[in-house]
Image (cartoon, rainbow, N blue to C red; front, top):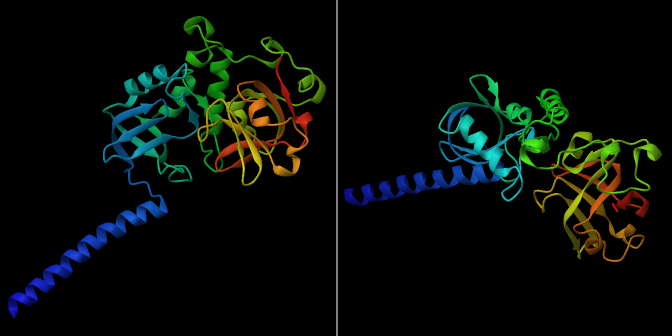
Amino acid sequence: MKLAVKIAIAVVVVALIVGGVIYFWLEKESKGVCLAPAEAMVTKVIDGDTVVVEGGEHVRLLGIDADEAGSACYQRAKTRLEELVLNQEVRLEKDVRDVDQYDRCLRYIFLDDENINLKLVKEGLALARFYQPDVKYQEEIALAEKEAISQEIGCKWSKEEFGEPKQEDEENKTEFQWSNLVTSKLGYDVVEACQAGQYRDREIIVQGRVTDAYHHSESNTVFLNFEKAYPNQCFTGVIFSSDLSKFVQHPEDYYLNKTVRIMGEVKEYQGRPEIILEDPLQIEVGR
């Protein structure tokens, strides 16, 4: 009888332990909690804006955006970040949100009190990229990007050093000709697609290449994604069903792989900037 009681107690204890572990992981999954401590060792660098720290948590650097694998500055940004933080004890500073939609920790990384996110932008290896409500260092990082552009620093901006095209002012963009969506006619700033997130709730002209486009059959809505494929797009132009008949047939095919300009008010949806296209006059293909 005593043996049976002991077995029963052991079964209950094991069940409670297993249940506790399952509950813990379910809670993490459902709430999207970052388990990385405030100070941690960087064990791996994924790319120029994502690292892994001890314990296995992925950390996405806030306020910046570096090239994905296969893009021009991917390797340079990744290598530089490895030089700076790999196998180093860093401080992880939170802004407002804890994790992103992929459950990556959202943090600013500091090494010996130096903001590494800011440093990558200063060195022309990453773009400034901010989304509300995480804007703690927006002023400093945006200023660093402006200086990097003006001084043609790093892989993103130095044509001479790396043999890559730099971002230019609208007046100097000679690769494409624009007839309608120009500052001189409309008074709006022309902004590169990957910078559009910094102009939330403002009317601007966004320029970039449509690298991914699709027609959602259920909602009869067309999405034009700029510079990178969904879900990593820099910016999206959206044509809803109610306005689709005003545009060219199959706009998802017509605009794909073309450099275009879109005019309108920048809104944010699921952390990404977008402009709603209600009229064909809002979009122009570069010639």
